[in-house]
Length: 185
Ligand SMILES: [Fe+2]
Image (cartoon, rainbow, N blue to C red; front, side, top):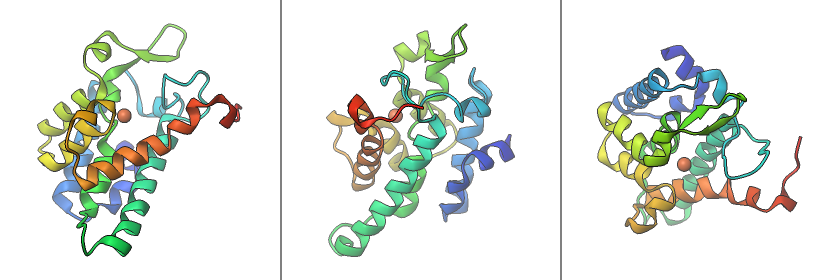
């Protein structure tokens, strides 16, 4: 399972702290163990159920968000780091874990397509993601990013790292909501 996770997520190697790196791997292992989805499903299912016929997969979207978050954090550090300290490991780990709860939110329907499960309707992925991460010892500042990355987090006072992950996620999502922007396969 460990190799499956590190193959799915080459970006885990960007996390410098060995303890945090291990906690992130363990959280993804736990999610895959408990999920009706398999790792290979993540490279096939659309990243969102909110865009009809979405042509981008879960893993393409998630990895894109991690790359946007890291590069945004680097630009902010370069020009504003003096006034706005940013912890890069927190940004990267938070971005990698933001949607881990989707493994407990989705299921595959009889048509083979992903859909929200009954549990997912009761507990969207920010909630199940935090539960999984806490079980694996992930620090609170990273659970904060998971908790606040989506619309639920609009009521939360976000840290700088949480703002970065939130906006990176929405940058890679909102353009798809205008059908004119999207090239279907
Ligand atoms: Fe999300």
